[in-house]
Length: 376
Ligand SMILES: Cc1cc2nc3c(=O)[nH]c(=O)nc-3n(C[C@H](O)[C@H](O)[C@H](O)COP(=O)(O)OP(=O)(O)OC[C@H]3O[C@@H](n4cnc5c(N)ncnc54)[C@H](O)[C@@H]3O)c2cc1C
Image (cartoon, rainbow, N blue to C red; front, side, top):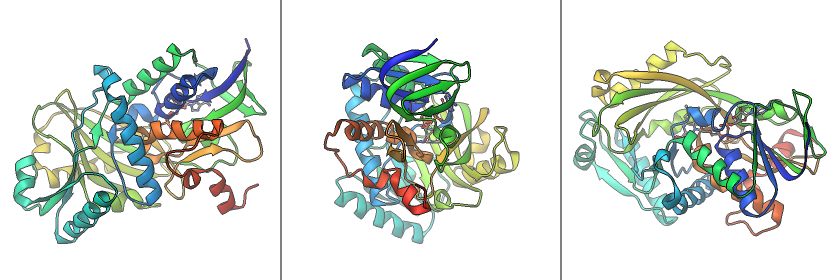
């Protein structure tokens, strides 16, 4: 069976594809969204769901903050199962060097309109009594939130469907170009635009797209309400998240609405298998125990892995792909795709409709990667 006559077909029903489907459908376009598996089943099912403002670069800050504000404006509509909670992040400082980073970050955020509070050791201990003794302080970012990503993706796809979008599951895309998407069952969908929202598999969908898989592990515990109140992240996380080659772990823990504690996180390149790597898992858990010794007494009920879609410059690819005016990318979000999904969708649709974007789009255009690496 062939589907014809869509304005846009989105390949990938993770949180990014879901957000794009909703945004295009709301603007009155005829949308199809397709996935080989199910909605929110890729990295979206594996992610922590931390809606976080980050300041690795001005472009990263602009995208994360813009998208966080879009999540805030959607908050009233989100159903309970999305588990959206504005918990706030505390960036934990273990020594005076990290406390200097707390002050730098505070200044950076404050001058750009993001509320933050510098915490001393006593205030930090009061807010998070299960942190070990001797922490120097931290930075509270109260507007950061958490949510449950697969249900958020499901909510966005349903919204898109209510506005006329068609969902096609069990369709493995094997080819795309010149307005036609071909699937392994021999069927085709034609559309004016094709959006590659294939996450870590985006490079397999379109030759020349430069995306590397970056594997991550997470552990979830049984229910311990009150054990943890904020999303806690060590300041060393920034160093480990930035490394482009080596494996790394960092203390990064999240309280779920259920009372469960989600423990992360790890980063590995070149690890293609989906299985749990016990060496890096043990490193990750002992890092968490160094910051919160009580974690060793919590019962873990599940461990899983997922693949982040990493680009060289740590910014996503949002916009047209070279050489074929029907092809667009919405991928490469590494560890921030839950946060930045809504802004990605807005920026993509703005480009297609010619609307003025809320933030400069240039840092995210796929063209930059082409120019850098000499592709056509
Ligand atoms: C351990 C871990 C923790 C994370 N924590 C956070 C966090 O706290 N906050 C945050 O903002 N982000 C976080 N992330 C990142 C976030 O999960 C991803 O950036 C985001 O889920 C990417 O969404 P996506 O829609 O681009 O990709 P995906 O969710 O991977 O979706 C891609 C979809 O494409 C489909 N697909 C692929 N190939 C084909 C094909 N040939 N035919 C049809 N369909 C295809 C797949 O089935 C999949 O459903 C984390 C990631 C990991 C791994």
